[in-house]
Every structure is written in C-alpha cells, then in structure tokens.
Length: 87
Picture 1 (tube, rainbow, N blue to C red):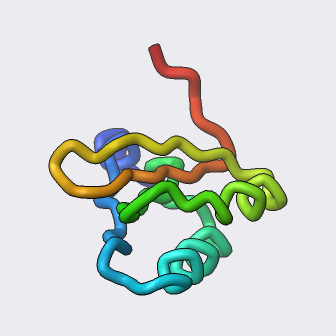
Picture 2: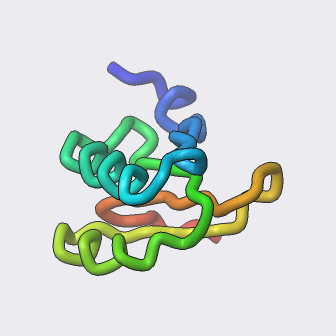
C-alpha cells in the first residue's frame, strides 16, 4: 500500500510553458483521462491561465486551483475531482 508520506508529498508539476498552443491543452486533456495521481491532483506549469480549459474541466466534473508560481514565470494549475478544504 502507499505510504502516507508518499501520498502527501507534493507532486512535481509538468512544465508546459515552452509548448506552443494548443499543445499544453492537449497534454492536460490526455493526462486527466488517466486515474488521479496518489497526491490527489494533477499539477501543471503554464505560461498563463488557460481559460478554454475551464469549461472542459467542468464538463468532466473536475475542479481546479490556479496560483502564481513564485519561482517561475507563469502559473501553477492543479486539477482534481475535489480539493479537501485546508485551513
């Protein structure tokens, strides 16, 4: 079984910032067709907020969080069936 430390380790985001459109979107759509990773979400680095993805994620019942990525140019986007409320 998965150890607890493994499951809670933040996943390394997949960096899609250098890809020309629409490749980042295609990579994300492909990734979210697979089972959710052990950490509970998929994570991607993107050059900007991917507006067209929002309705596609909603259609699949997926939620997302986007935050500026301090160490990089761009945004960190996490996608999950649901995000636990964390305070």
